[in-house]
Length: 364
View 1 (cartoon, one colour):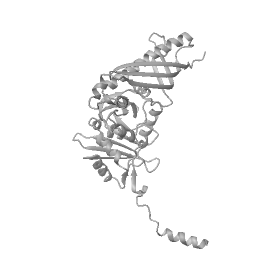
View 2 (cartoon, one colour):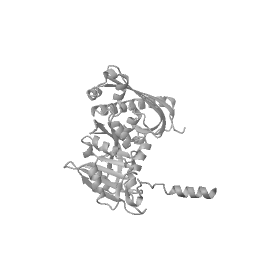
View 3 (spheres, one colour):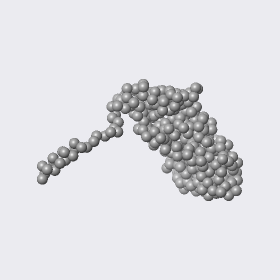
View 4 (cartoon, one colour):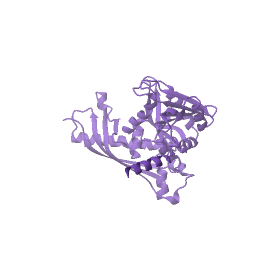
């Protein structure tokens, strides 16, 4: 019986087909980071960073230009012994020149290409993506993986929220919300890239406006997209002897943001509740009276911060918080995609911030 089963299995193996869609590592050049720019003549420039074959080896840098994104990818393959494979893609960097016009077609192509990793992080660069990727980076990690780590660390501190190719493409197909993504700059002094905030888009075009680091944290609090670590440092005094005593650092342990538009589409009400702990404050002891005074100052400061973020979003017509989705869902008869940008820009904002102090962090 055992012999019969053995020969039966052996016979069946003869009819098994091999894998028809395999990609062997020896035949491909894995690209971990890619950047896209638009040249002066309207062509697409693609720059890819591939990990070194040996741990101490040099990162492979590949640059090619074509009349479309696919054409530039084809040109890239002509420069390497294998073919470029984006299945392990970690980060996609978009140059400002490309984002100045609608990036719909570029993101759509990235989204529809079955070889791309849709979980790759996406960001906008202040300088051409090609220049950034080819600049020296003083880091212990190889440069092909550096930008993924850079974005991850800023996500952990709630400066930005996770934005993947999948997320970005979902937003550009959403008429009630505008695209936003991390904004990366380069510091010549330390030879490192830096996440400097959040780039704002309107109708799939970069508005030339971005939220700085402090504003980006407030934006994520408004959007309910913060991570576990949310720290805010603000000036609360102007008359202390030591400069450090004029500042306070708090950690937001819990937060809730509620955004509502009235039925007349004239007012946006933002109610925020924070549970905070004071991490650092240049006072030896915080009395009950001092705690109440500090709480009031922080409430006023954070209320103004929220107002300024909403004002910047409105002035750039960037509905990155998706207020339009709320109008379309709860006031369907009033929703008009064609006029929403103007309506959104003219909304009067009413901000309420409520603080609960869980601890002072000061040793008595």
